[in-house]
Image 1 (cartoon, rainbow, N blue to C red):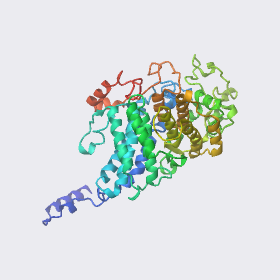
Image 2 (cartoon, rainbow, N blue to C red):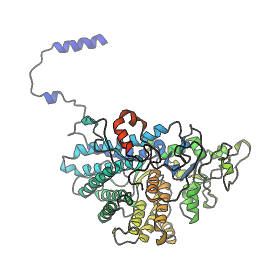
Image 3 (cartoon, one colour):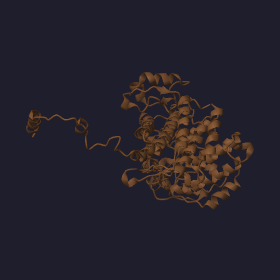
Image 4 (cartoon, helix red, strand yellow):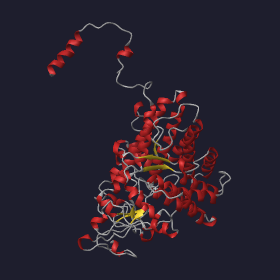
Length: 532
């Protein structure tokens, strides 16, 4: 067969070739799309899915920030355990891989968004796609910067132009550029032009009005990141976002519905269905105590005490969701029999089951069955978050409309309860409103109250990266660090993720320059620009 192919090649080379001026047609592969023929709409769902995936499951946040923020708790401790590096800040065998997961996945999303922009920027008819691409770049790259600090930005995403070793830009320059670009992109959305197709945000369907509200809500969130480091810029963009129009109801929530049958599995659900994790991962004492203190109606929807015994405890069957029996697992404990053994924790409730079926953590609450649904929603940004941020903006004296901080807070609390319906736990709006009214904002305690609610709400949505970033910014809730033996952060809650190890070897000079700008270097406890 090889000889026949070679003979055919040689014979072809001997055939006479006629002259032609149609070189472009001859040299164009008819099976490949060009910039003129490729539909850039096809990139949008990939951008959206990659972004939510970067913050889900074993891509990092459920292994890092969920425990750092004392939302989830676990008794695992060995280097091979998935959750060992969460609430105890202990290196696991896969930590280096986790460090790169959010970096690689978010940059992949950003590269798709950049390509979508390049394919449409010179076509005024497709300006909505161009602007949506820029909005998603702002979402993705700001999150990357929130996690790591300085990042490649101006020279990033330029591999097609030959730039493969991009310089790192300061977080300050990244944020200010993204806010400017976001401002122009949202203003440029035009309902009279073709709408984006293939939109993966549930219920959006390319609706320009929804995308405008999403863009302005993103602008508000980014602006509020800067309240301590650059109050003037924070105020300017928060007020601009409010004037433009942020989310108005839970119907505006930006989220992506997973599709397990077609390979788009909810990573959080996959993690919680792993037998060891299903057995040992629990809601933290910090969160459960917070919800129980005010009889929060979310408690019975999000938590369950599994059936007694080790085997039953590992079952995915629904447990007891009675709010009265829920108990959070204290952070920082293990089952190793030493000083940090869970049986030595204050208020230890005792084991469940007998003999070989006995388990010391069987009475602690785990995430309920709604979190094990592989088709569940993955949240990007919600009305609840937006209203809580507006409540803080008013408290800080920003001019973001006529509503009071108390009104925004009430809306945010109620919305956080109602949006659980996207995860499969429908709590009536009347119940949510009644709870929010019965637990009003107290002006003297406003910043603490607002940001504790933000922490609980984003944590319940399993948006742990957002819980962490807002904690860094606000300082709430007040958390007691876990000083577990062998931890990697000196007994302090990490304030950033380390750069992926490959950056030091593959992009060494630029990596070193960025690290030298960090106070303390490339460490878990070094603070990024806006983290004051």
